[in-house]
Amino acid sequence: MLSAYRFIGSIAAKGGPTNLPYRLGPAAEGFGVHPRRRRAAVAGAVNNANPHPRRHLASTTTTANDVLIGTADQEEPLAAAHPEAPASLVEPEPSAPLPTPAAVAPAADPEFSADSDDLEPTPAPSAAIGRTQTLAAFEARKRSEAERKRIEAEEAVRRQEAEVFEKARILKERLAAEEVARREQELADRAIQERAREEKLARQKTTMGEFERQKSEAARVAEAERMAALKRAEEEAFAKLELAKKLKIQEEEARRVEVQTKKVEEEKQREEKLKKQHEAMARFEEERKVKGLGWRIRENWAAASLSCSARLKKYTQQMSPADREAYLEKKRQEEEAIRVKKEAEEAARLAAEEARLAAEQEAEERRLASQRAEEEERLAIEAKHRAEERAAEELRLAESQRQLAIQRAEEERVLAERMAAEAAVRAEQAAHQRQRDEEDAKRFREEAERVKSKAEAEAAAARANEAEAEARKRREEEAALRDGSAVTFTTPAPRTSETLSEQARREAEEERLAREEADLAVQKAMDRKKTVRAAAN
Image (cartoon, rainbow, N blue to C red; front, side, top):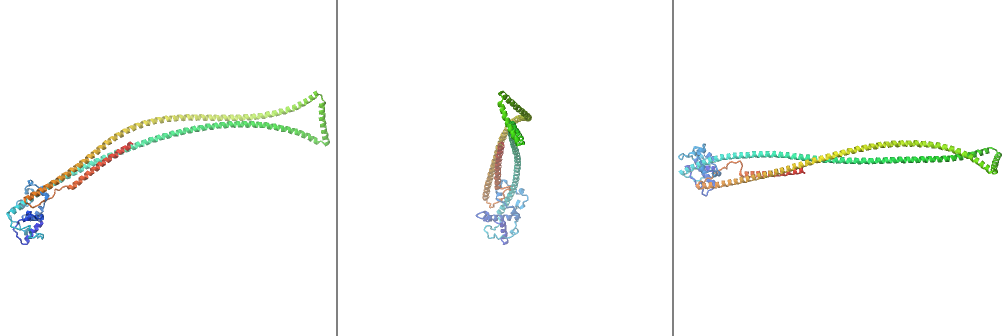
């Protein structure tokens, strides 16, 4: 339109006709002319009827959406819709003098020239003035309609923003509730894990207690076996000691008998030796006596001895048998007396020796008897102590076994009750957890389906709106062409917070987030189920 304005100015600068408004050429009628030239021609005609060409150019710039949105039945008076509009646009006066092109054209535009076929300056008929006024009124109505649409679009934007804020608030509240639920679930899971850990510790403690009891029982059995082995060893040692003592006593007795026998034999040998020594000494004395004499005396003594022996022999031979018998008897008696005396002396000596040995043996026997008595008394005391210790140990072991049996039975009963209660609680928790998981999964699936259906509905509505807008646009264009108007108006689309593509992307993102939340909820439910199963195991 600015090019058309410059074109009209260039005509006036070259000295062309100034009796405007000009007649629109074939370009304004829309017969096989490029749209840009057709718009320039229309703009030139409008500028001739507008005393404020620049403001009018700025205010009449519109789009096709203004034409599509506005309808004929929704028109309202221009003065009511635009009170700030100039009086020339509100109530045009045909008899008013029109401005010359030199007054409204700022400069010549080299793009267009006076030789153009699209614009032909002709005398201004009255039909062109009426058409210009009708076009100005139409533009005013379109501007008022565009203003109304703009206000409605702003209200729609505000409503949409309010809906978005409400959705954001609801989403925030839902996220906060989900966060609270998640924290509560985490606390519950942590409590379950803590309870499972405590139960595991209790089971470990019970196992360790059982292990300690078994260990103490094994230690007690080992101690009892050790005490029994020690007792057997002591008994064997005492038996060996008794046997050794008996053997020692027997050896001492045998040694004493042997010593006594040896002493008797030595005494006999000594007596025989003494006897032989006495006989030898007697012979020696006799020989010494004989040797002390002279040789003649010795010879005489020997001769006398021989003669004495011969005379004794002869005397005995000459004696009567009775005398000889009496003499021999007397000699035997003398020898017997000497022998008896010697035997008595020997018997007295032997009796004294036997008395001494008997006293020594009796003293030894008394000593051994006292030692045996002391040893037997000590053994009896030790046996008594061992018996008392064994009895006390048996009582203590019996009491400990009884206490352990009672404690084991009580622990088994308590453990069975606890395990039954825990199994019931775990089963109930597992049932509740399965129900909650199923409800959560169902809720998230429904939410995902709802979001998906909502997104599909909004997309379908957007596509329907686009189709309706396209159809309306085509109908308006066709109506404008049928009315003979060559002007194509473009009204800006109502301001919205987002375009259809952005809305589609947002809905797709919301659907993706909903699906992710549903998957996350299902995963959390599976994790909780695994945790419950692990705790139950």
